[in-house]
Amino acid sequence: MVKNVTMADVARALNVHPSTVSLALKKDLRIPEATQLRVLKAANEMGYRPNPYVSALIAQRRSKSPENSTATLAFITEFETRDGWKASRNYLHLRHFLAKHAGNRGYQVEDFWLHEPGLSPERLKQIFETRNIRGAIICPLAADNDTLEFDFSDMVAVTIGYSLKVPTLNRVVIDYFGLVQIAINALKKQGHSRFSFVSSRHIDHRVQNLSKAAYLAKWQEDPQDFLFPLIVPHLTPEVFSAWYHRTKPQTILAASRDTFAFIQKWAENASIHIPADLSLVCLDKQAGGKEAGVVQHLEKEASATIELLTDRLEHASFGIPDFAQVVQVSGIWEPGWSAGSTGALN
Image (cartoon, rainbow, N blue to C red):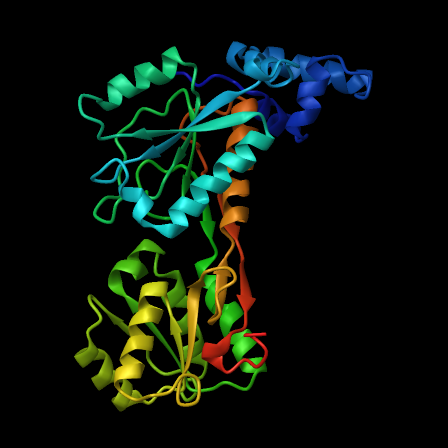
């Protein structure tokens, strides 16, 4: 399939911003005449043709009539059940924020489940074409899958997280490597020591091993203060207890809320007091929670997803990108009772 030349292609060829190309092709007076002529010449030589979908979309979004001002973005899920993704609190928050920021840009978000009875990928593609839906957000995939069989050749798609490997799409992710660095830097300033990191292989795989990598980098630099991590297929009280009493960590970074809750319950049963005997930190802390940890900024992740998607949609950058872009969203440290922070409960 021959790829249509887009304004972004013309902009790259001329080493200018796509908005310059857009304005020049409209003969906007803000663009010097010489630049307009250079852009027009390059566009003609490269075979650029205005995309009627994009022109209609922009006109629609600029319409004064509310009922005609909203285009649809697909939120695609492929869990075993239609609402399987809703079991994740993070995904629920993301979906809410996606709708909010899409609405701010004149779009609405609609859910599509790939395993809907009688709905093949080909049939869903026909639905998208009939309804002129050209933008898609891919929800993180189910745990046992990393491939999505769907034709994105004339669509713009952005995936959230690292779970989707094929096809290689533009993606927006939490900076999992940075979460560990943020936590360690904050804890070091508070005088914490004898660190370790606890996770499951499932979580580790979902985040591309990035949290583990960040921790192991510290362990390699200072194995006296950073103990070897515990990463197992399934956490059990017996396995954790044996590891804890063997290594004697003073500060544990828990990769998830479930891991944090597991260690908290284990400590209660073992008469180990948090934070007096053990400081415990959650790397996926819920905003406003009382425990110490790093909040994954889900609203920023959603905002970045909508911005990335709509920018490419309005520049007609359809299809699988030649060079996929990854946008990372930083976390935010919040002190709390579990790491000995005073005033966290005030």
